[in-house]
Amino acid sequence: MADTALKSAQWQIRWATVDDTPALLRLFERSFGATMSLDEWRWKYRFADSPGVVCVDNGELVAFNGGMPRPVFVDGQRHRAVQMGDVMVDPAYRGILTRKGPFYRVVQAFFSDKVGETLDYRYAFGFPHARHARLGRALSLYCETDVIRAAEWSPQPKRRLLTTARPLTPQDAATVDALWQTMREALPEVAIGERDSRWLDHRYRQVPGRNYLQWLVVERLTKRPVGICVLRQHERQVELLDLVAPPKALPRVVESARHLTARLGCDTLTAWLSPSVASALAASGAQLTDTDVVVPGSQVNGKALGLEVENRWWLMGGDTDFR
Image (cartoon, rainbow, N blue to C red; front, side, top):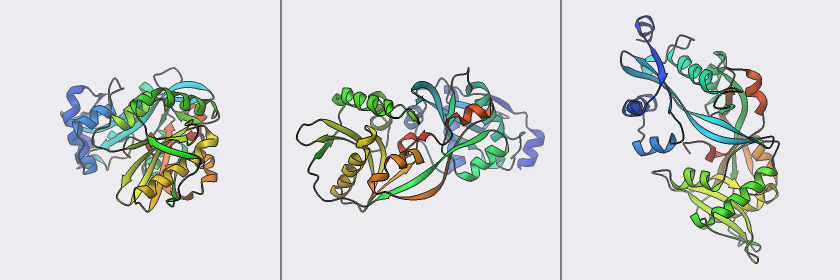
């Protein structure tokens, strides 16, 4: 069917509108074999003028490349970046793996219009599996900038003497912002997505259908803030989604997360980490393994620009939209 479609299609490539949302949700289900709620879709793309680029064949949406804006700091400067997500191709069209195909057309159009030194976003990043990323590189769409590793810690039931933790509340916004400012100023060498109170509220409190646990770690005697950890429980396993703390304090915050894992009655604390994060957590005793997830950038408007952040990303599971 793909060959027939390639020969006969009068494809339209354009930016998605609100009116496309029902068709995009149907395409999501066809592409991934799962459903997404309208509320989650709206949450995900709330900061984007358009969710992304669509390919239309005879009135039917057959491919989509989405993008979610994310401020990032690189070399102490604030830039606009975009997280690529929901790269979808209708199963009937997946065999067209050339520059004439829907995958190439929607990704190329997005990068060409939006990602470049003088365009809306200086950098793009995403979390595809290596096989998908290889296709993007072969089509001169992606450049590989980083990788994701898996970390694992045992729970720590022993009571901590110097620190304690309490649930983070909206009233802690000033504390979050102060910790974030200290963190980013201490990490000028990495490319790190904004983690202020507004971002944490959007990412972890406003997301529909998920239950995240945000904890503020403080010194037991002085109550001075040490850092923040964001957790998500998966039955007997706890996932560490995010950390906001000065780099020297990060192992202490992980120690608190291990203690909270024990309090939840779980067997393991896990996390997704880029190597920059793993290096900062070297003293935490994490067991690291490789994953099949990579972090590509765009090379459509210049590979050198995409490679400015090569091996410099500070990424965790919370930097994705799906964990």
